[in-house]
Image (cartoon, rainbow, N blue to C red; front, side, top):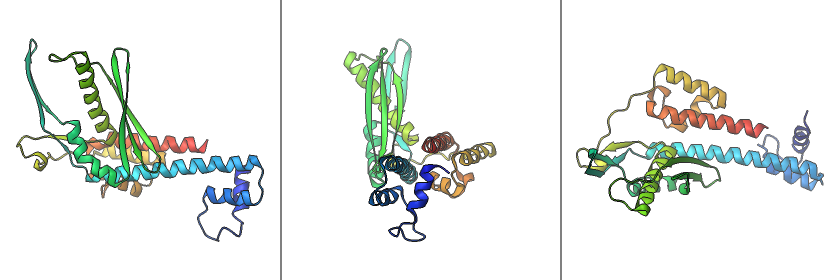
Length: 257
C-alpha cells in the first residue's frame, strides 16, 4: 500500500468528514494540516489535489464543448472570391472570421468557453495557434502553419495579414469541429445543410474501442457527442471524437503517474 493511500485512509476517519460523503483531496489536505502532518505528506496531498482539479476541469471542458456543439449550426459561406490570373479564373465561396464569431461567440460564452489566437513567424511562414479555454481552467490548442498569401496584388504586410486571417479561421474550425455550408440560395442562416452520412459499423467499433481505452462509458460519450444513439452520429464527427477520447486517455494516464 502506497504512503499516499495510507494518508487517504487515515484522513477518511476524521470526524470532520461525514460517513458516506465524497471526499476531495482538498478536504484531506485540510484535515492533514489540522493534525500537524509533516511536509512530505502535505506535498503528496497537494500533488493529488492538483491532479484532481486538472481531471475535473477537463471533464467540465469536454461537457461544455459537447453542449456548445449541439447548438452551433453549420457556418454559411457568404464571402466570395472571384479573380482571373495567368493561371485562369479562381472562384469560390468561404466563411468569414467575423461571420463565424457572430454565430459561435454567444453560444461559447453561454457554456463558459472562450478562444484566442497566438501567432509566430518562422521559416518563411506563419504559425497560428487557436487556444480554446473553459472557465474552470482547462484549455486545448490547435496549430496550423502556412506561407504568406501572395495571391492578387497584395504587398508584404497584406500577404501576411491574409494568411493570418485564413489560419485563424481554420484553426478555430478545427478546434471546435465546425462545419460549413454554401449559401447557394442567398438565404444566409436560413440555408438548409445537406444530410450528413452517419457512422459505419467499423467506425462504431473504433469509437467503442476508444471509449474502453479512455474509460469513458458510452452514456457519457453520447452526452459529449450530443446524440441519443451512437448510430446517429455523423461520420464527419468521428475523427474529432477519436482525438478527444485519445486526449482523455492520455490525460488519465498522466494523472496516474
